[in-house]
Image (tube, rainbow, N blue to C red; front, top):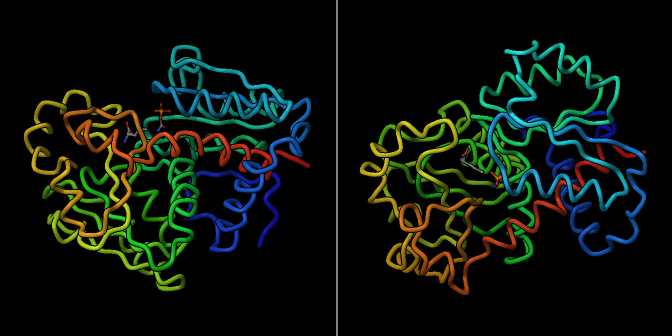
Length: 309
Ligand code: CP
Ligand code: NVA
């Protein structure tokens, strides 16, 4: 295991099985004993760059820094002006002179990679068009809390093969959770990411399946996960996607098809009535607000490991 201090978190793939386990164990420990970490980032500052909107990511990173006795600065899409007002490299070279870490939510994944390449302080990916690592890591915490572990359990992801799907595939490969993805034809997760997960998953016993068949994906699943049909930046495709994705709605019928009384997961925000019904989102099997809460604990762990002493 390489030391965490000073590293970036751009994708889960960059962390070994042991390192992912250590991040998740640290998150569980911080959740249980928050008082022991009250001064963990005393006097430290996190710059939070947003090219896209956010509720959970902004509030959990900012609250996390406050709880660790540090400080967070919100940089709005217009203030960041990444690549427009100033080059990404120059933004990174300014920020590193003032702050102890950078969290960025961006469109092009290359933007967060470029920030990391040009800043000597840790850079954390708070969502890019291709990945959402802190979401998937938080979800692994939620899954372990509900099921008691990852190995021997199956997650079915139903809907768009997007940034969240990609990070769930990486996280599953590192934890041993089995993943079955069902998407409409043409909306599958990226083939190179699936291939990586299949290969890396051999070490942990993670089995990956990708198809266009909901019944096949959810059969025997312990968790059913979905996300919006049109992600941030795809608003112009929303109407077209609504028609294509309609058969992929997670409703009571789909939940029953699992035959296992599965838990329901969603990274949020949810478009209720589209990818999920109220009935499922508000059911006793829904863990959506536990997932949202765990963003806080997981990201505190990430910041303590990357930015702490
Ligand atoms: N799940 C998530 O990242 O939520 P926000 O877009 O509100 O940050
Ligand atoms: N796939 C969604 C996730 C939001 C947290 C998006 O990128 O908009």
